[in-house]
Amino acid sequence: MSSEPPRKPCIQQSSLDEVVIPATSTEWVTFSQTALLQAFDEMAAAHTTAAFRSAARALRESLVQPSANHNGLSHSDDPRDTLRLRCDTLVRQLDQMIEAYTLERAQYYLHRLRTGLVDVRTSAINDINLLRWQEYDDVLTDSLWVIERRDTSGAHLGWYWGNFVPQIPHQLMLRYTKRGEWVLDVFAGSGTALIECRRLGRNGIGFELNEQVAQAARELIDREPNQDGVVSDLLAGDSRTVNIGGALAAQGQCAVQLVIMHPPYHDIIPFSDDPRDLSAAPSTETFLTMFGEVVDNATPYLEQGRFLAVVIGDKYSKGEWIPLGFSCMSEVMKRGYTLKSIVVKNFDSTRAKRSQEQLWRYRALVGGFYIFKHEYVLVF
Image (cartoon, rainbow, N blue to C red; front, side, top):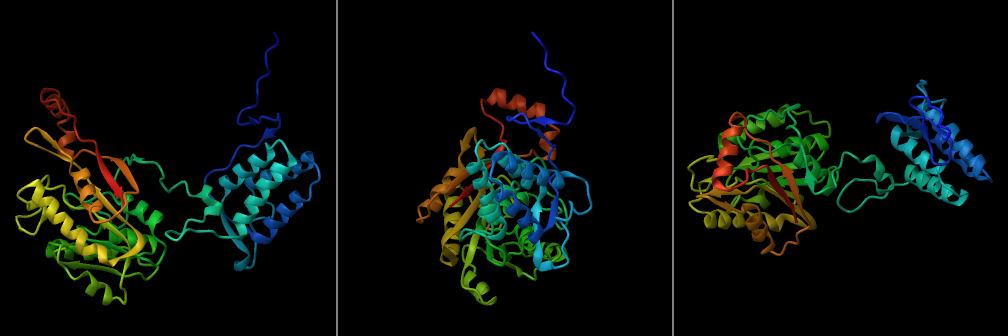
């Protein structure tokens, strides 16, 4: 039995026994739209599968070569004649054409790619161009979010005990808002969501019960560059009763397109002894009643057909698991909302718990419980 000769390193063999050049990195490249579309037209003019593949491989090779302008494809003196594309995504789509078994199928893939470069098709709730959906691999679509560490770049200092990771509002805004739209955060805390609003070009209005925390958050938000000139308004007040409509009217608005709620996980972290503070609620039932009042106060200002997200975890009390997440979910659904998704996000231990991991493991074995390692992002 003969053995297969060794292949050269870094060369991948396609299913058609044709050598394929390794794909590029995930860099973004600015192309000349005219030059790129002309290359596509030359491919489309091929009358045989072999001729099409030859043209596609030539184009692919020009994209992966470390030349200054990709053989003229990325050079344009006219800013109106430019396309900014993920080079690796473009290469993958060319690979799909090269491996197509029929000319008709390859032409279909080419037509789909060409359409995505000259046309835009978005939904009513975000800016994702569905004709170029392959480029959005930074947008999460799975229901399990594993985030290794909190984003601490820019104004995200993580100084406030109990704040949530910025990646959560970041993902929610990418999925459920367009640039220039309005986000309402009724448990603003250290201003995490409003900082992300600035980064993504969304207007943000937030409410925080504690005036001192609100002032510290305002100072942090102001440190974040505001390249899009969006509104970042953080006010002190009780979100159960505060005049949300008045705050919006002061900005010339009557509605928001996304509501984000990251309430205290009841009394896990006692933020204050203020009776208006949900973390000071004397019982789970009272906590849920107060949470429902916040939902009631925010709902009239959420534009019809748009989204509300609740970030919440569960708790233990007297040896019993208290399902705060599902109880809050029930409170929202009682008010006519439709549950769209339940996302489970991994929960990093606090520094104190990390130093006592073995102790917590022993306690779990003795007490018959499991150590919290997740929280929920509930989307309505």
